[in-house]
Length: 429
Ligand code: HEM
Image (cartoon, rainbow, N blue to C red; front, side, top):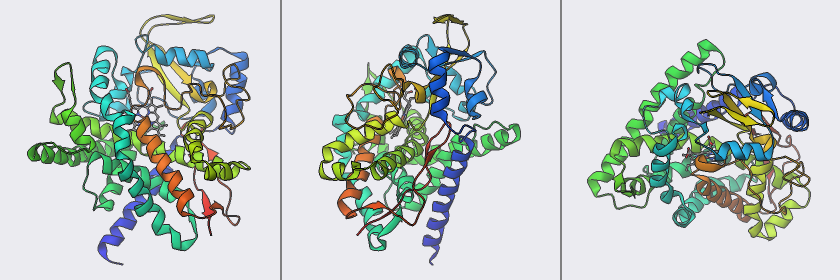
């Protein structure tokens, strides 16, 4: 094995280990998250207490000052909270693990500051722009990931699921494409930032230390790219250049802002897409008749993705802080409280979805919350959908008669907070 191949393998293994450690951290203790949520929807409109710590046992906002905590479960309540970002704010995110981010972290911005930054960034992520990236993403999916697997006639698709969104995102950001080893290192750093949110105090400290190194290293790598483009006249079509050229109400991002925002995308864009890929592939391969239908009618691929995001949102809840006293049902939630919005519950609320516990790609379209809702709704959702679309179509086109490997365990989606399948073993002809 030559040195480059060896380092590449080592970094790929590190990425796998980092992903597994984030999955462990957010796995929690519940066996059946959906049953717990169903019960709450029936009996308790607003739970007074920390539902997530008590029933799911996963870190939410470790390292933050404690606040009175409440949880909501119903479709309409979750929608109302996520929609009203003035009353239900996100700034607290920057207090805890957000401390390691020194810069533009849009997820934790509120009010006018958030609105302005979002307006500046949004155009780069709209479908008309994102779809221009299709040939590039399609090429990465097919040539870099699917074609090398073909001679083996069997694979764990999660090797692709873990690495492909990272590679695609780094290609879109505009990193040079000839150094996959470097991508994996960046992806390990990006996951290290998520791992900083620990329940255990000693581990949290260590997590934050590693995350701080990761944040700085990613910033340096991105800044180098920003400065290179500035020197070359910023004429390309990659994300960094689009951000450099974006303008709203006469304001443009400076180099520091471009680098810090691009950095905040990397953890947001990687493992979320990995988990959603694992869910979509699991349903495609395990629900009787679905594979044939989708193989023969590719217009169903977007519906498969939408239903996967409803049925198994990769992140099962979102938290907000109240900026004023609010009344929900009979409960007055005081100003300065945390409200846990149970996305996994709202997405299966029987008052909003017929037969909510059935995976049904033919259901009538209706908003669900796997990509969030309201002002903070996922800015990268069209990128994620494009990546998933290219990956699924590539697999169906290039792996003839792809199906589950009967000699391996069937994929299983698990996790109380960050859900996904660990492996998806397939064979093809
Ligand atoms: C299937 C994959 C993905 C899922 C399930 C997902 C999910 C989400 C969710 C639920 C939110 C809302 C967070 C909140 O309300 O607090 C969000 C926000 C965000 N996502 Fe994604 N995401 C995915 C992929 C991506 C990708 C590919 C990118 C980048 C290209 C991205 C960038 C962002 C950013 C920057 C925000 C913050 C937006 C804001 O605060 O205004 N995401 N995402």
